[in-house]
Length: 299
Image (cartoon, rainbow, N blue to C red; front, side):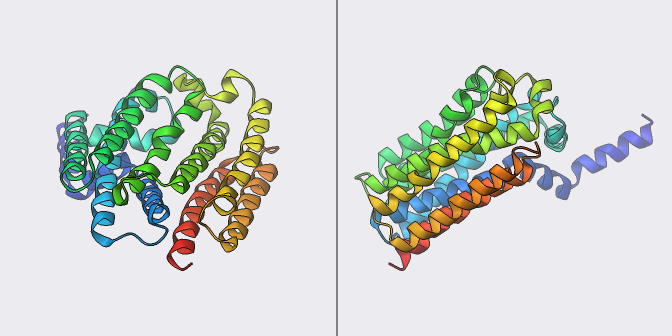
C-alpha cells in the first residue's frame, strides 16, 4: 500500500459518518429494538394496561442501554468466528474500523449506564434481572455455549426472553403470571428462529466451527425440529388468551400470525432457502408483541 493509500484509509477511518455507521452495525439495532419492545410488552401485561410514563421511560431506557452494550460485547466475543462467516464480513470490517478498545469502552459504558439508571430509579430486582440478562448473553451464551453446544439455540433464548420479566418488574414488584407466559412464548420462538438462520448460512457456521443443529445432526432433522417448534409456539402464544388477560381478538390475531409463520416455514424448508422464513420469524415476533400492547391498551 502506498503512502497515499494509507492516508486515504486513515481519513476514511476518521470520518464521523463511517464510524457512526460501523457502531450501528456492531450494536445490532434490530435486536436492541426487539428487546425494548418485548420489555414494554411485559410492562403492559404486568399492569394490564399501558404503564405509567415515568417507570416505562426508565425501564425502556435501561433496557435500551444494556441491550446496546450487550450487543457490542457480543460483537467483540464473536469477532474471531465472524471473520470466517461471509454474511458477517461487514461486521468484521466495522470492528476493524472502530477498533476493539473503543468498542469495549462503549460496551462497558452503555451497560454501566443502564444498570445505574435501573438501580437509581427502579426496584432493585430490576437491576438484578438486567445484570443477569447482560451476563448470560454476553458471557454464558456468546463465550461458552455458542462455540460448544448446539443447545445454545435453546438456552440462548433465556437472556432474549428476560426483558419481558424486566419490563414487568419495572412497573410492578410482583411478577405478572401473564409476563411469565410471554417469557415462555419467547423461549419457544428462539429455537426455530435460529435454526432457520443456521440452515440459510450453513457453510458459514461450518467454516466458523459453530456446532449448530444441522451440523451436529442433519438438515432433515433440523427441518423437522423447526416445524415441531413452531407447532409448539402457536398454542403457547394462545395461552395469553386462554389463561391470561388478552382478548379473543388477540387470540385470533396470534393464531393467524402463527399460521403464517408455519405456512412460510413449510413452503421454504424443502427448497433449502430459509431466508424468507427467517425474515417472517422476525416479523412474527414484532407483530405478536405489538398485538399484545394494542390489545391491552384498548381492551
